[in-house]
Image (spheres, one colour):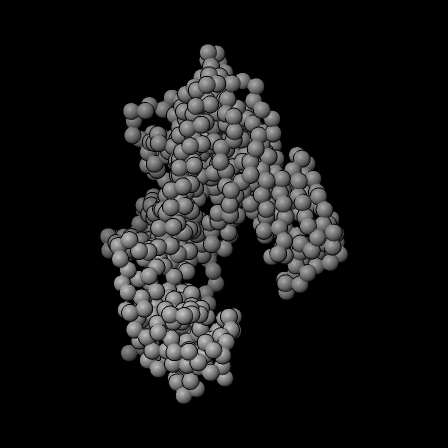
Length: 588
């Protein structure tokens, strides 16, 4: 039997145009039907239909293989789609916030100013090369900042944050990127040094707020595709607000928030203590001590006689001492004792006396306080349990095995503790954010008698933190998605469907941007009491927008909404073009 197979091990990759030629089977079939002279017989028609279906299936498979634009069938979820994309994914790669460049003497460091007044305080010896060696001479430091939703959109930097299986958006009080080079080689930061960052920015705060909200510092971990919590942001207002509506109510709310935060911190500390009890340190084995020439002596004692069981009124430490001594006797049946190096000396008379009683008290694993008692005298010394040479090697072998098991148990305990502590810290951050959000909602409801006064004002702030490595750093606080929601589909003015691509949503009250994978009946969360702007980028790199006034007309009783986006027929060449299209600036 002849096998007529033609396996192509490394076939030439098909172009997108060739794949598209056979993707529309209906058009191919119509072409045959419109020409009677070439119209196939029924059997041929069935064959053609099968071939067409096979070609269509092959096209889909090839589209997956060659990473062509995907469909909702290929990416059924947003997570699957975003996982297939670059983690930092600018929509317009030719439009990026430019870096400011500073020439830094690596031996001296210095203070360097950004165009808006932000500062970088670079210490001496702050740079190392790829081999970990300190860099000398001049270094080129590059720095830029991102401050509002347009900056976030154009950067392609994700603003989502997962904590304790809850997904948040990061509301920013300023974000920056920094790196350093010398002779074209990327440098790293000296692990023993930090760069102090004084980042000036603006945040939206409720009218009349006396202090800024709590913000945290996050570092973008591109390899792990997430934001890494680094600590608390030292944030402060640069200037006081002039309008204080219902000042007493605001002060009461602020005081209540302060008390709630203190209570939360206390609960967190108590949880850490409880955690250390729940996951205790393993007990380290006692390392045997070899007897030296200091006249080791036998000390046969009855634990129950020298340390009787503790009465209810006595301290629990006596019970622990008895357990320690019993464990010692059980472990070393032929134990000897000798004076510890740090013990008071024993005179010759004491060495020759016949003592009537003895008390022994553990001080630590190897040191014991020995009290020798006679009717005429009492002597206190410090002794160590020791082994003679014949027993020492055997016990040392046991000790080595026990210590290896102890180190393994300690590593397991530390890992468990680290995971649980990280979860507690994430919970603390999330709980603080929820309290802050509730506080702001309370302040927003406290309006002045002038109803035209805005509930939120744009306030200048200064953020201070230490950057311990190069990359992207963000002064943020996690906020939950808005509670209002509708299932949305997306079409334009020509009724053309827009889906299976990234869409964006901005809330004028929150300095962040929500990114989602636009699909039919996608559940959109938004704040109906705020101004919202939704937009997406078309395949031909145009922006299609759904403006705030349209959001206001959404019927809240409807579960499904068709978002009729308007495609702006304007070539996008610069950031200025994007801002002109979106028209959604924050108040100054």
